[in-house]
Image 1 (cartoon, one colour):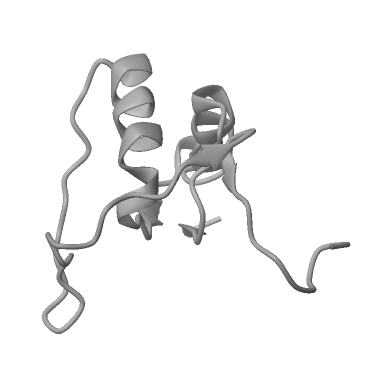
Image 2 (cartoon, one colour):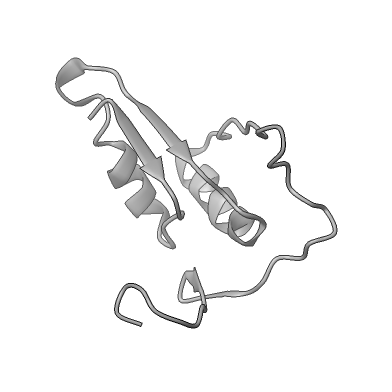
Length: 88
């Protein structure tokens, strides 16, 4: 795959490595993009620890994080959300 987009970070850092490993197979190159909300900052740090490398961050104008918003707890790796979707 030339591109992998993560709309949610996985709760297991090894799963992130597996996902982005789908880019650049067979000596080809690829790019991975992860959309990270304030609730997922700990998950991102865990991935960086596993990789032993900082992942570059780019704030998109108009979508900058609001420092007044506090992270909500993520249980079992995912934020508890009510409503439909994905079997809920």
